[in-house]
Amino acid sequence: MKILDRYILKKFLLSFVFALLMLTVIIALIDFTEKHGYFIRHKLGYREIIDYYYSYMFLVINFITPITVFITTVFVTSRLAQRTEIIAVLGGGINFLRLLAPYLVGATAITLCSFMLTGWVLPRVNVNRIAFETKYIGSFFRSRSQHIHVRIPPNCYFYAEHFINYSNSGINVTIETIKDNTLVEKLSAKRILWLEDEEKWQLQDWTKRRIEGLQEDVEQGSALNMALNIHPNDFSINPKLHEMLTLPELYSHIELLQQKGAESVHIFLTEKYVRYMSPFAAIILTFMGVVLSARKSRSGLGLQIAVGFILAFVYIGCFLFAKGVAEAKGTNLLLTVWMPNIVFSLLSLVLYRLVPK
Image (tube, rainbow, N blue to C red; front, side, top):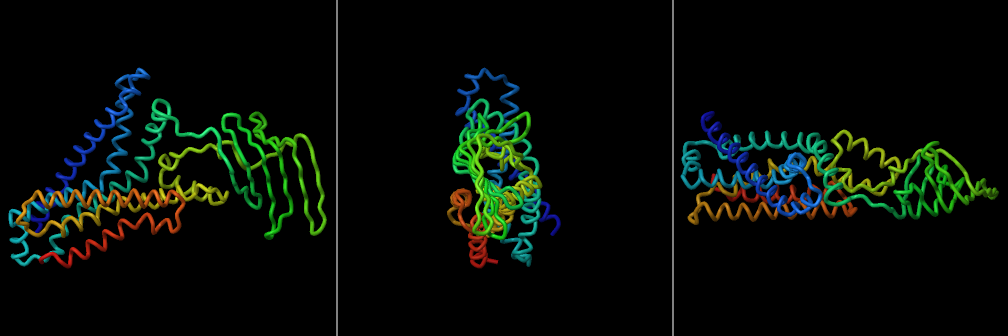
């Protein structure tokens, strides 16, 4: 059986690598035709463009790995089935689950490589890619943020109606101190300004209310300098930040956002769940690809490959939809992100019961 294992594993991995490289090059060429106008406008040299596409290809590889695994599995297994090799193997007394072993070994290797890519390699190269796209193609950063809520540990809550990033200033600010679920102090200001030299905040036209039971003391002033455990960078909205953090950095950033009560924490939680879900999809889709194409079809190899393409694109559509719902602050983020894998796992089990063994 070791000879058969090496035979299937070799065909599976070589076909996967070949398909992955071909699809990556094709997608990169399509992207180049769309962006070459920006390259000409900014008079970029070959070195800068090559460096950009070096980073961009890692992004493409990560995105198309699940669909490539599925298509490769369908292609390899369909060819074995059409040449009656699978029938010969099963007729020789080999269990169908045993036949799956080399596929699952290859899928596990791809899963581990994909996990390393999404957790550590891709975030590092994304820094260069996003910096390039921000500088030459389009800015991702907002210059003005609205209705900001930030928790300042341990018991203060900061709110600004507007914050202007380029001037490091905000308007209509309140800082509330709450102890034992009771408001004990509220500091309001019409404007807040970051003092770079002192690394402090200046509140202008401020009013402070101290509340002790039924007693209330009110203070007012024109300017008040104070140190707060927040920085102007906390208000700079970078919608691509979650793509530039390694997995350990992502965990630390999520913990920091949860401490501050930031509303954007769901985006980073979604990214964390996706980084575990996406690599694991290789195993599910490999299993599904084998049971889908192990039966010899009178329609030939073309129909089975076409069905494989259709199901692969359905999976990608489900994945993008689930990720979009989660990033839109849906509920049950973990279940939402993993829903495509759950659905396709159940579908694979149904197909497994139907396949001749």
